[in-house]
Length: 71
Image (cartoon, rainbow, N blue to C red; front, side):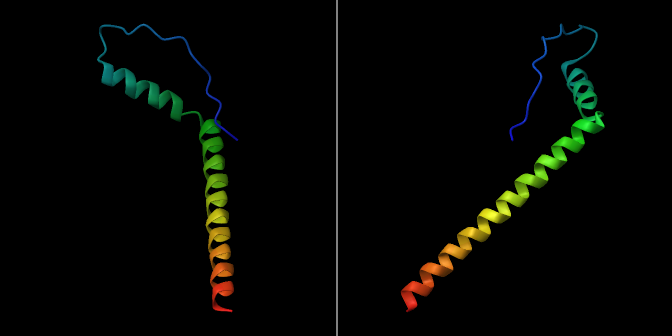
């Protein structure tokens, strides 16, 4: 479930604008896309659930090991 990024052609930098302004404009253009943000939020939620699941499985396996050692 990796992210798919569209590769764009490098745009020529206009000399009237500084690099910082261009970076800010590109960031705004990317983050204004609501669908893209929803997709990222969904992916983040899936990753958080996977992480919680892995931690729970790790704890579960450690409790099994501890129980075997105690018995």
